[in-house]
Length: 377
Image (tube, rainbow, N blue to C red; front, side, top):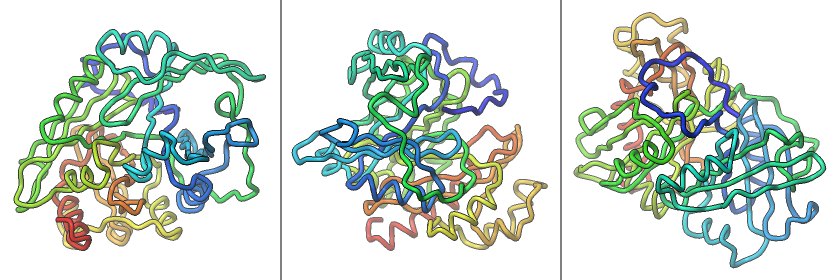
């Protein structure tokens, strides 16, 4: 559950409160081999064992491992048989995010409000119980086959959800310093960005806080457009990207081709010490996009004085940008799946509430270099 409770600017005032959201409850990925995926997220990213559901717990259709780091919970789910909806999702999209679960005070009210405002039904309010109490969950579709599940857990003291048991593999790697989900980015088709921005505004009461067009994010060959939607307390932020016209295939078009539709492009996770986090992630085999070394020659002229030494930022490839509230440091992994789809962003905010607009050009060019290596530009 997200605890980014920093005071937020008046940009968020437009957001409505008819559906209170406390934060991100969990993110569920459908993956080909959840046991191996759990080991990967533990080894490479520093997550820890939390919970398990499968044949041993009475689950006959699928198996799930839940890993946790600070306030980030990932649920990794695989089918146990052929011909399942989970298996069909993986066959079409590859491994990727299926569920972005939102922690709410009342899952029934959240569902009713969303449906009343035009959301597509995914899961009616359902009470799930075990010896540790009860949880109410409900759900709606967002872009593509991605869903939001509303989770009401006021009356539950168990490890995760009913049907899950505590999981302890005996393997406990140390944390890499990841704290909470800062934002999650969705890619949608050309012409659909405003459709989904309006969905978040009308159905969930979000407000648009930032907008970028092809003048902000473009190169000689490709471009994209993006708008950032946020709920009222600022704990849930969903940038929505769509491709813009260009001479060649943009990163958004590449994603849509390989994911075979709209979906979650990347998960941005926060840290208090990005230098230590990225150094540890690199030591564990995580690969990051690199901008040209010349980026750092003019960095301090562009962003002004920062607390960090320039040398480790240059060494690790960490980017810096400043807004009226402060500055941020960020870096992006290469795709973590065989398909060039899902990746992670590591971000440290030093007062800034923006998303690194000053880095877009260098970042976009770095992504194009990777696309060229893949032969998909």
